[in-house]
Length: 419
Ligand SMILES: Cc1cc2nc3c(=O)[nH]c(=O)nc-3n(C[C@H](O)[C@H](O)[C@H](O)COP(=O)(O)OP(=O)(O)OC[C@H]3O[C@@H](n4cnc5c(N)ncnc54)[C@H](O)[C@@H]3O)c2cc1C
Image 1 (spheres, rainbow, N blue to C red):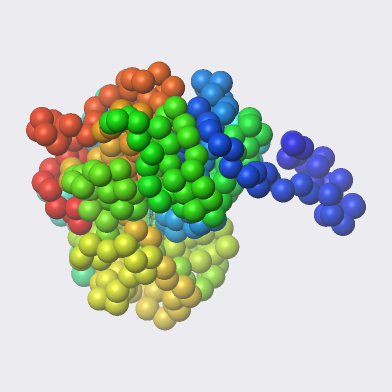
Image 2: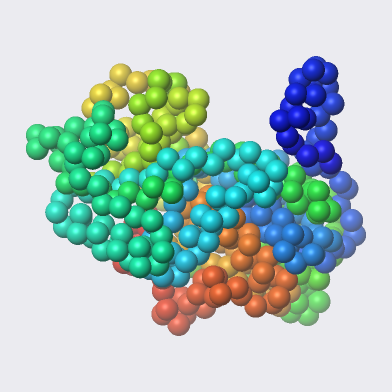
């Protein structure tokens, strides 16, 4: 498969762009593989990529029930950051950040990673103290973090009101300068192309409908395109985790599926050069390269597998946006959509061997699995290839919920909407 380069762009431009090859093949599924990865989202595709790249395991199939990018990987608000408090999260997400920083080169695919920073706004002195604590913890662990004053925030973001008369006065903020955004579809396509080039079969329109067992052991899957055997079966289906694991007879998981909505406005001239989160509610916003404001808020208040959301959340999100930026009142919303998020009970992910022999599980990404895509695939591939976790995902076990060793980043308890 051809390398993408400036020279290739020029050559194809001169020949009418007729010679571009498809970025990945459309293979028929084989009867058996070394590894099957269920789910062609960001995490499934990156897992397949790192299995091939880091461990030389190329006899791999990624089975996707729809088309690549149809799940959350193509529905998120694209924020990438590693501004966590607790060491297991900080280490894991910082590793992801380092992989993001070289991802376009690694994949030979421009994922449009833009390190424009991520700013958490503080609206009370206590909240600013809390952010200072998190910033110190990040710096102790070698992650970039800066506390900003209201005046510095005003310089960065002229449209914000930092006066005492603002509805929610701004006391300062915690900035991670290396955070930012990436083009989410490009991440799926880049990993797909990278895995395909190393021999991985990416099989779209192939829904897993059951698991094949030999005694307790999982030895393959039944799909809408027939039975496929494998030595190892890895599940990376995000919001569908409960449903897919039920096919294997696992009825209870510390996961709830909820819809998270996202919104994009009409295109504006550049007004916002960073990712911003509102500290008095749950609202986050950035501006896409096309000019649209991309924003979101809370998950819907009830469990659901529908990929569309409800109107009360739309009203909440708009109210929060206007509380923060009254000047956006006349901007028109262009589109909204929803994705099904796998909310874990402590807000941290699960990347583990099991829970059945021959099976591996990757889930619990809550609001923030897009930024984890590189490290998740890297660690899950390690776990599958070596049958033991990488140091970076050793804490993200399933049995931590039995043993009480939770990684509750925000100290919120088992309340998914608060993570
Ligand atoms: C609106 C929204 C905004 C978000 N914003 C952010 C953000 O700003 N930053 C951030 O870090 N994270 C964000 N997230 C979270 C992030 O998108 C997810 O955590 C992450 O994408 C989940 O992993 P994935 O990409 O593998 O999931 P998905 O893309 O959902 O992949 C799972 C795949 O499994 C497939 N599948 C399901 N069942 C089967 C089956 N039976 N057989 C075969 N295939 C199956 C699905 O079709 C799907 O393609 C957001 C999520 C949403 C919904």
